[in-house]
Length: 232
Image 1 (cartoon, one colour):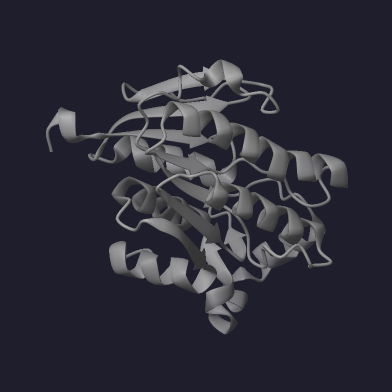
Image 2: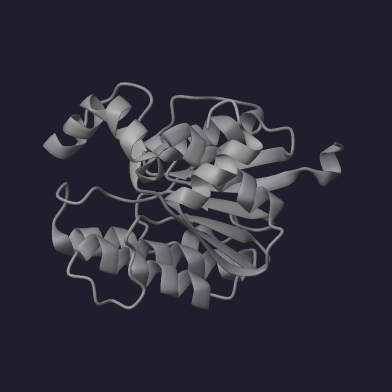
């Protein structure tokens, strides 16, 4: 592939678990010529393809207008765990930050394809009793209405961290402990973080489907098994 045909990929949330894998995968991907990572804290990585942009206030992304020019695709993994922040902050991060970023990106790169890390149970109707589901659904609705040519909504169930980490809650510690059995009993309720990241990047870079598309956990696993069968 010649340099002129390589894609410019934008990554938001690269310091998180899924975003970190998406970053590493994209930097190694021959179809990607440049990765622009919008981060709130400095990355511990350097690479010739990587352009790191620190931006602390996602409530106002206006200053990113020039940075977001000419992007082909975005993988958006910014988020927070339920219980780790207040309900008001969870909505701000999940909904308001997504809408504000999409607003500026749409103005700077109107033809970019958009992969969004949503979650299993996301409810676009707003009727769910679970705040996370309502907020993810609200963010999904906003992205679909934003006018991008292709919006891919990824709804993973339990995301297996792969590498050891400090788990955010007891339920996550429990799921990690029983993961081998859980995976065997409920294969369509789990997805590896690195597999999810690859799927989000691949779909955004290919951009073959117009309009919006929802990928539930089962769909993501099928995609991984088709494209990367050795890790599925």
